[in-house]
Image 1 (cartoon, one colour):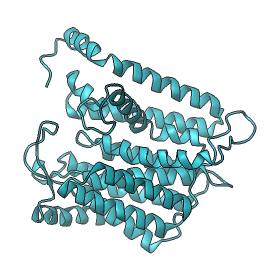
Image 2 (cartoon, helix red, strand yellow):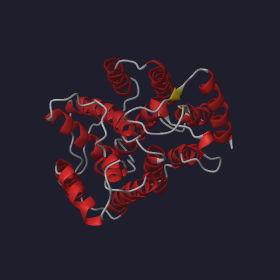
Image 3 (cartoon, one colour):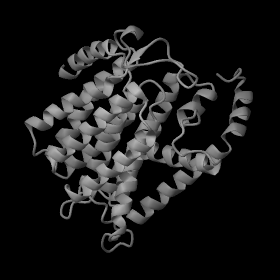
Length: 345
């Protein structure tokens, strides 16, 4: 209920200060849509942490970092801040997480069947890559109605299950709070039940904080010296779709000599739309993929599937995805011709 109330309050405020998204060559929605989904969701989440500060480690540090990302995200939605500034801020926040919060990717799992493989000081570099990567990966998938919220819900729900099964009940409860705060946003983003008139978007403020929160909890769940809830390899599966799509997209842009963070319309959801699927159908397909990947991660964790085997399977899946996306336009033409789909949208 508090999330729904927050959405309506901030929606009016967004319209008042012109914090809205306008249609353009990459955004084909109708009319001006308020960009306050992230603000409304995380006001509820932050309030929960203020009431229960021991839910996560270094909660004040998390609140400070996440609030900074939220504010800068709102300013970016309003004034289009330089990406270099936002990237530098993300690196600084990574350093604060490591230096003040002790959240460092110190090992990458039990790959050799004996003890977790320690990566020593290289872990600091990998942590920065993980934080910056997660923040931007979730930002990149925010391309069709309901997708960002649904993928975030799948990831947080999966983490919550593993936290609960490993008796980390406070962390499981925190994941549940995020999920329950996000569901009303998903419904309004899809125009349910109030129609397109009350439609809202997450905005960069929300997508960046979602990515940051995901990587914070993945590090907390996988890197605890004692009582880790899941392996770092399992963490990859829990957020597989945003991770794989972002890595492949960035690799493709670099190969073309473009900026790795230059917006385009070549993400998975764009491809599915070009194949003739509707926005809702594309949403269902991608969410099913995410559920399968997260389900495999949970299965691997519960049944002690060797980390090396799990990692190899993940890399094979990522490689198949990358190869398909390299040839996607040729595949798209053949698929559309086979099913008799008309011209591209």
